[in-house]
Image (tube, rainbow, N blue to C red; front, side, top):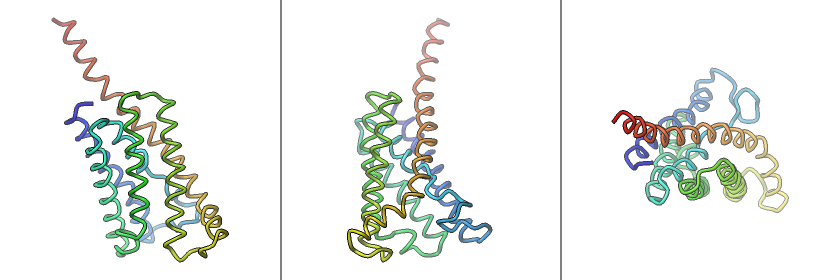
Length: 204
């Protein structure tokens, strides 16, 4: 994918992701519906963030700096918008888990660069699964270590992972759905220029 087109696509994805990220917090802040985590009214973690990070890597490929920059900008805007919406930047926005969440997102972007050279469905599924497993293990380790929700014991760590499973299930579904969507968009963007060139050559 050409650099200019990749940059524009990354910008569009970033706007899309930030909008979806902030929706449940807008509902939670307005109390228009029960979106309290743990209830079934809203599928928490059903979000396109992981899929977008993979897409950034797949779009920019060997220009990894662009993929990492796009990932950092997206994560920063998501956290900033969430913190501003909830009126608590320290907890919801620029929080203590940023090294874990942003680190895993950058890892996903790095995984996505492998899709630039060889973009196949099996490879896309493989890197998505690897990214989600790493995200689950690392971010919940950080949550157990830094947040006062579970005792700092092995049993507390296991309990942290068990409590996170419902959210992880939604995250897997979200990555699968949005990953398929972004994969289709990437393929479409690659084929359109080639189709146009073929049509032009035929017309000549």
